[in-house]
Image (cartoon, rainbow, N blue to C red; front, top):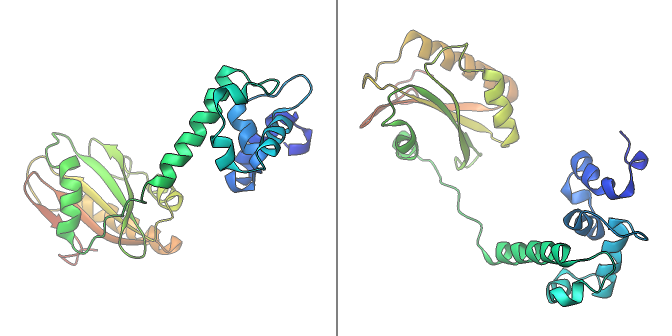
Length: 225
């Protein structure tokens, strides 16, 4: 649906979904926080009036008290608290350092990251770790549990998640509750399938780890990729 056919109060949310958060004006962002306007003004118009009153400056807006905000028609205590809360979240975010992503330099580094999740399980689980070009971890996710085979591990879902995380490389891992580190034929088969699929998307399969409680096997170290 085109944005111009939507009610104005709904446009900021729809615009967010269609074009992303960076496409929204300050008034539209404030409109989403408020949720609605008043009888005379849409949420966007009301947001514009509030921002105009503080010189269109978020810092100045954060200095207003609840008693100042409720002076605007259509702004009650609940909306005032929502505005103040959003601004406080922004303040706290700005005061925090961006957490350093873990860099992986060896298969043992991967084992240290994944062993707490997989080492003590009584059933098999299949995980994927998303990496950037510097071999830093962007995220990790469990994809399946109960055994490793093509029907359980959906390669399409794996690469969909990798693309969503902007990964240039991935590491896959699963556990062997039996303690046996020898890869099965199914392990080798799914590894090859994922490796070949990654080549099409330019997402490299960096390693596949089989993990037990106290040890692991790296496909990369064993030249099995």
